[in-house]
Length: 577
Image (cartoon, rainbow, N blue to C red):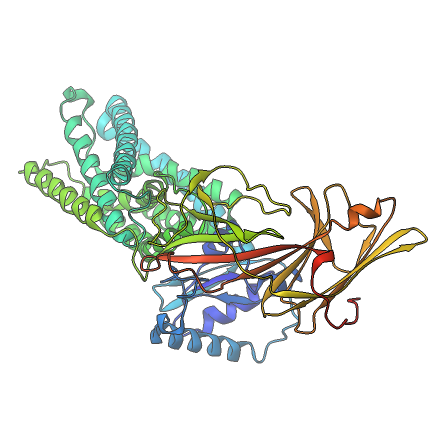
């Protein structure tokens, strides 16, 4: 999927839209990505105003950035279609002046993965303006027709009951998500098989909407809802107009998802005779085809992607997230569907539909309840870390997760307790970000995997100069120089910053010959400089056997804390400049 483009990307997305044989992507993904708390390899280029296209396989992102993110999880189809799209797009740009820049970002999207459309933001504003002007005119026309057909009182009662029914339906879907969570041993029972939960929410939403329509039949006859399809559009168009305006302001790259259906619906509803049910239903079918093309496939893939995204975030997913997303989609799909099938004549056997919906709720609810929350291919992301202070043979161990259970295998250290504060350590260690963190004291980590080539404190004219040279004994370490609280260097050969009250300079993956750090200090007690600590962190090491891995994947790190003046001496290296 093409999920990121820019900046000033119109000429690039245009080449993709014209030539990619299997286009998949949309500018709404750009708006989503802007709001995610992470970057990609393309971020560095985009910050320098270098345009480009960023593609990603999003269908299976459960293993993203874990040891299970292996080549065999990438399907041949994903490789083939991505390669063909990239080559075709590059060929299309081959004769283009790549130093050219358009002023605006583009709006782009594919149509069923067969073709694609890309147009400038200015065209997008023209489309939006036309859709909203026509939308207002269409709304006035269909509302006037609805008032003529049923009268003001019945139209108002229909609007009020529809709004009330939508609120009750939303509450039922949120309640179903809550019940699924409350009945299981985990907080995210939908993670490994989200489709089952989505089907359950869909069944509950449809069932409750139908139940509210049946309850409405008990109202006095003069307050019964109007069944004419034009009434559906008189209630829908103002919502589409309001959402289109909001999206143009908040996320213009995604506004086409609302403005294009509105642009199709408005002229059709201006042209068809509003009192002719068949004509309105035919127009509704056309509108439904457009909205379904834009929304259905994108919704299915987006929902799966969102589940995996929330699995990577250190938060307990609120139970309203997925019902809310489904209701947003329903607002675009349900109105044209209802208008296409609405009839003034009541169903002959409404009890059959009631029974079918109840059966659907029971079946989908059972499948959602029985689904395993986590599997080997869709694992729970957990974090483990250990820190060993100088002069000790034990370490502080912490385990964090978005699930409340500790769930460790035999052989694990004893004495785990849930924690809400950071461990007391001599270096800034902080607290794991997960909502459930457990801590204990366990086996030590052994000797620190570094040696010291030299550590000196030298008086100079303006104060003191400190040099420290660290040589790693293993690859891939992160070495941090941590000053005592309240001490800050006047200059440092490695950039640093305050971290949890202590100035820290870090160097990731030092070369085998080591790194040299030099810093100058003014107006400082030299005895305090002997309290400088070196924190050595190793990530991704071999996990202890007591960490279960059948349905979990671990982010692991080990940190050794040693006084800079205590490390073993080895041959010196040149200082880092």
